[in-house]
Length: 183
Ligand code: HEC
Image (cartoon, rainbow, N blue to C red; front, side, top):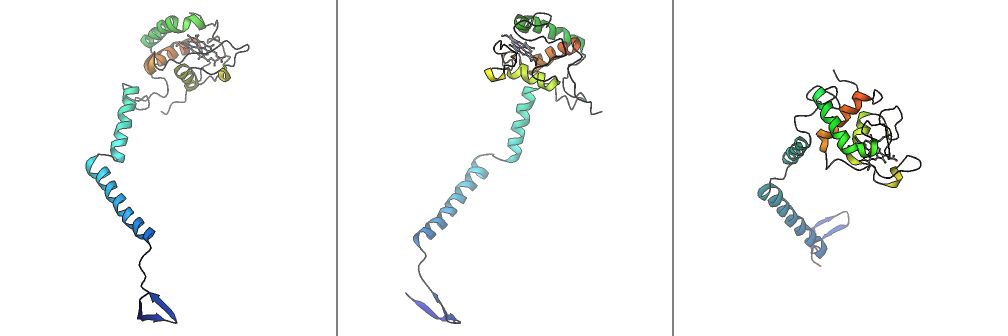
């Protein structure tokens, strides 16, 4: 052990030992990690908060073409009260939902959608979620006796046609709660 006699103070002597191996290795390790991080994120890829945000916006626009309902001043269903959309929604309902909910929506295997009884919530958003995501697990089936699953329609119909179906349902059922307007 070498020691510098000049660096003694109050009886405390400073030694000049070699750094322990683990210390040197982790020090050099942080330099390497820093260099790799710098090159990867700032030189060779365009990873950034801004590009991630742009990606999410593009994804959203793909899902909801025609701009967000909030931007257009309508809250919730952009087709509520739109005669052409109600007509299109009715056609979809008869073709796709009629087998289980009856063509007029009064219910067969699936529950009546024209009354004021709602198993899974009567807000527009809850109805939307049920139709898009379906009720596929037995613990979601609330009809007694349980009559099986309600299929998801996210893939087969997509957001636009599901909102049209809801516009049709809303036209026939005043018990669907619509969100308060922001205007
Ligand atoms: C294969 C039969 C089937 C088809 C097709 C079907 N549903 Fe259903 N639906 C059901 C069943 C069964 C339930 C009730 C599940 C439970 O809670 O027990 C249900 C529940 C619902 C509910 C919730 C009702 C409530 O009281 O909360 C809505 C809304 C609904 N369906 C709308 C639709 C719409 C709109 C379509 C067409 C796009 C559709 N369903 C197609 C069988 C079906």
